[in-house]
Image 1: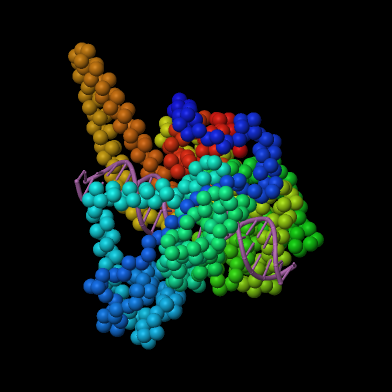
Image 2: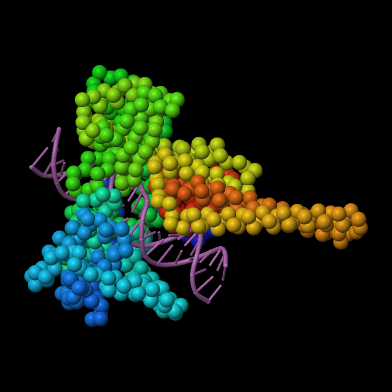
Length: 593
DNA sequence: CTTTAGACTTGGAAAAATTTTA
DNA sequence: TAAAATTTTTCCAAGTCTAAAG
């Protein structure tokens, strides 16, 4: 079978000496022992050596014939001012630049960096003409695309060299891939949703901004010539290699390992083991919060209703956010009265809660759910005498909730419910949808549908791809063509059969067989196309990636592949297989989440 | 208790690479 | 063999959650 081959090849070609011995791999007993051992003192590594971040190239001034115009007249800008102008110019045909907040923030920050003379002249953004600069970059892009094969090859080799030099580190004796080894280039901040800081200037990161973390005895990375690091530290209780503070949100950014690394892989595994432990106690926890719906303490009731939402609807915890600093989004604990509507009866259902709010990344969550009567009653109570802008759960926050969860199960937090419910849903859906008689394409449709059920649960949405309609049409054209071919093949078969009927000779018989084969093949191809079309249509606005990468225990998928003879390559690409190497290595077909 | 800092995971869009099609 | 379509990778923002400080 295919998977056996794949597994043994992997075992031979890519030894993974870091995997825990077989005895500890299965069953929760072995794993929990391993977890405790790891988390005891918070030490993450013994040895860490790397080259430091790769700094993005410095700004190259525009050629003299590319000009900026103010109030219709060309104006030569200082280098610093010009650089920031190019950030805006590059975005000219993006929707961002039409937004007032974006424009205001940009202009404010831009003016701060101007020379006094420039400040005197450049007073209004609407008198700035970036179009020539914009065109320059568009052309430059085109030119890059039009490069010859050899030139492109050369560029690729240069990039590979940088990757080779800066893209890896040594961690406890193993060469590991780094996730993001380049500093982020300067530019204009693009928040998501209605972000109050959109358009602000994101400054260039210099070595003087960067803290290096590595082991004392390692070769300490050299800062670029003429520069020095902000600090070099030797902290083995954290996993980052370098960090800096980003100026727009004043938050830390890190350089960390790639998901394929041992460190990340073990953490990932651990995450799913925690979720599996929740499986053992979730019934008890559910009984508990249902009982708490009737508690005398308001705080307990709120906690119980919130936990119910988190469990049933896979809502995020919902930390508090600093008002005015970020887009106005919420999660469970930060829901406000205005985010839900109560319908005693709706569309033949009782006790319906209508959710409508912006969640992470300003993705809208809209859902109508029929809930148990005590939940409904509690919600009415929580909303009583409150304004739309008031907190629904005024006695609750994520810290309180997580403290409570920690008491119910070691390592339990709100997000574990998302992981648990996502993974268990995949497992159940796979069980319900997979037909062993299907061919691989059919099984993959079932897999995608199971995956989709999870994405819908977690509200993982994407905007419909710009080319969706067209590509759907193309597929339909293909299907129609295939149908025609099929019809023709049917006629030909009939003709061949008639001929055989007449002649009864061997040649005619062989021809019948040939036509039958062709017909079969065409039928299969048509079925495959239909499956493709269904899958595509159903996936129009659903993003599968996040759940696949972050919520679904890969062992469920791998076991499913093995059980039904689907090559792992069909569901996980190279990157994903690297990330899930730990799971591919340890999972057999009867793994149960 | 509240606030803040820090570290790490999760998220969709966009860019880049690859494959398919005409 | 170009260009269109699709898949993969990169990007970096935005969450979660813990710990320390006030």
